[in-house]
Amino acid sequence: MAGAPLREVELGPVKIAATEAPGGALVIRSELPLEPYEANLGALLRRSAAAVPERPFLAERDHHQTRWRHLSYGEAAAHAEALGQALLDRGLGPERPLLILSGNSLDHALLMLAALLVGVPVVPVSVAYSTLSRDFGTLRAIARLVRPGLVFAADGEAFAAAIASLPGPPAEVVVRRAAPGLRATNLATLLATTPTAAVRQAAERVDPGKGLLFDGRIAEDFKLTTGTWVPCGKVRVAALAAASPLLQDAVVAGADRASVGLLVWLNPPAASRLAGVPASDQAAVARAPAVRDGIRAGIAAHNAAQTGSATVVRRVLVMTEPPSMDAGEITDKGYVNQRATLDRRQDLVERLFASPPDPDVIVVDD
Image (cartoon, rainbow, N blue to C red; front, side):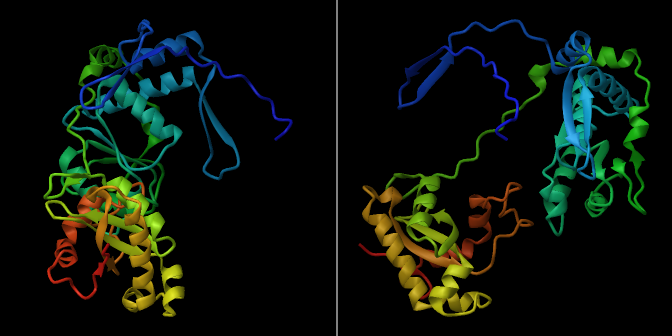
C-alpha cells in the first residue's frame, strides 16, 4: 500500500457558533450562509447527469466478487428515469410504496433514486428481518403496515422464504437473480421501460418537505422512585466492563423501583471455565458459586466508583435463554433491544426485585 496513489480530499469550510441553553444543552449552528441548492434529489441527479455524464457515480463488485460494475451519472439518471416510469406504470405511490428486502447494491440505489424521482415512498427493510429471522414476524408486521405495491429482492433464492411469508394481497416481486418456483419479474424488464413525460411531471411534484415524519425518540433511561434518572447506556457499559469477562451482555432494570438491577447473559467460555462446568449446561454455570462470586465482586467494584444511586447496581439475575430476534429482543444491527427484552421478560424483572430476594438473584451490598 506504500506506493498507492493518494489524492487530497477537499473539505468544506467550517465556521460554527456554540451557545449554552437552559438545562445544560449546547446549541451549535453554522455561521456560513446556505448556498443555492436543488429542490429535490431528482433535480440534483439530472443536473449532475447533464454536467458530468461520464463521471463515475457508483460502483460495486459483481455477484461473483471478481469484477467491478460501474455506473456514471448519465447512466444512473437514465436508469432511474426508466425505473421511475415502470413504478408509475404499476400504480405505485403514497398508498402503494416500494418495499426493498435486500441490502446495499447498485440495483437498490437505482430503485431508490427512481422512487424518489417520481414521488414513490421507499421502505428499505433490514436484511436481517428476511435472512436471520425464523418466523419473519417483524417483516410481516412491516408489510401489513405499509401495504407495498412492489417488492424487490436482488437474489430471489436467498429471499424466497421471506417473500412467501408476506401477508395481504400479493404484490409484484422483482428480482435481479431468479429462483425456481418464485413468481417474479426480472429487474431488466423494468429497466427496459421507456420514460415518458409522466416521469418529468411526477418529479416536478415531489415535495422534499413531505419526505420525513419524526415520530419521537425511543429512550432507554428511566427514573427510580427517588425521582433520579438512570443513564442506562452508561450503567450497562460500566457494569459489563467491571464484571468482564464473565458477562456478555445485560439490560438495565429498575423503572419505578428503589434501586437499579441487571438482567445479564453470561459469556459462556469464561463463565464455564470458572465454574468448572460444561458451557452446554448454562443453568449449572449460572448457579456455580465461583461465577456468582465473580459477578458480585465485579459489580461491587463498579459500585465503589459511583457517586450516586442512579449508577449503583444492587441486584443481578443471570438469564439462560438467549435473546430472540423474532421476539424483537435483538435489533437488525445485532444489539439488544432493552425495552423489548424487559417487556418480554417481565417475570424475570419481578424475580429480580422480589422481597425477600429470589435464591438465583445476586445481591450486591455495600
